[in-house]
Length: 400
Ligand SMILES: Nc1ncnc2c1ncn2[C@@H]1O[C@H](COP(=O)(O)OP(=O)(O)OP(=O)(O)O)[C@@H](O)[C@H]1O
Ligand SMILES: [Mg+2]
Image (cartoon, rainbow, N blue to C red; front, side, top):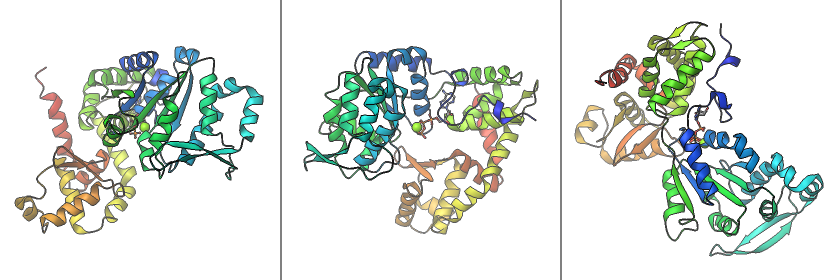
């Protein structure tokens, strides 16, 4: 049986170059923008490949040679303190930091008391209060990090991933950070995030602190042609093959979402013998494995729903793939849904951060956030095969 350790379809965001798919023009364009002295706001829907792309760019030989790079994951931080700690940790970890300040300098910084930033109600910086950090890990203050970056011989690129998170802090974080970032000449920033709406508000509304301070970069899907070629090459590296139409089937079924496709390809690769050829049928076997591995989780998520109305709605949207007109009289009647405002509330809850099962798009259309959950529900209702057929007819129906 094939070993998982020898699988070119990686999960996680640190993907060796050899197994990384495309993104050639994106890498070039992002580097050119940074080179021109602009910061970048990188946006895309969830799970397309923002974080992996930044890591990929940072791992390029010429980038390593030219820049010090820092990748700060802001996700899960709740305050400026958390942010500073996360930034400090990456700063200390990075080999760039060691080069920047030397061992002695680093030790001095680690012993530095932690500077807390005071902000006046209008968001302006009003000075620093210095106190001792109570945390276990060493903390470098934000001014110290920025100051060291500015003094470095090589220019720096700092990426803040899931940057929209700072909007949730109790402090006026955008104003604080802008105060620093505006003054920095030796450091370029990449602000990446998925929450399009929030990022847009931060960077495009004129009264917000980051207004027009950065170039916008919308990361699109990997093209179907590039993905087909990539998958075929990955299989061939291990003396296996995959039919182009099996890859197109996955692309169509998952609407080009990188995370989902890579998960299916990982399993498809695993199920393909050395010298064997993966087909659409292998992909379906891989999907069956994946859906059954999620069985407990999806069952639990379904059981946790507040009431039958929410369950009915979720099933309805899953079976449809995407649905609109959910509060129309005909839909209410057909699915035993009582009244429009109760349905509105249920939809709101299903889309909320807490539940996160549905996503709203367009005016009032909905789809499941997780395509695997949609397929699992379809399987429970015996229509999985017809979902597969719909995806197949999409690209087979193409006269080309
Ligand atoms: N170019 C690529 N080649 C190979 N795999 C990739 C590529 N881009 C992304 N992936 C895979 O897809 C998954 C999702 O990518 P990533 O986490 O970078 O997306 P994201 O847009 O940052 O997602 P999120 O919105 O969840 O933060 C990763 O697990 C990664 O392994
Ligand atoms: Mg990410």
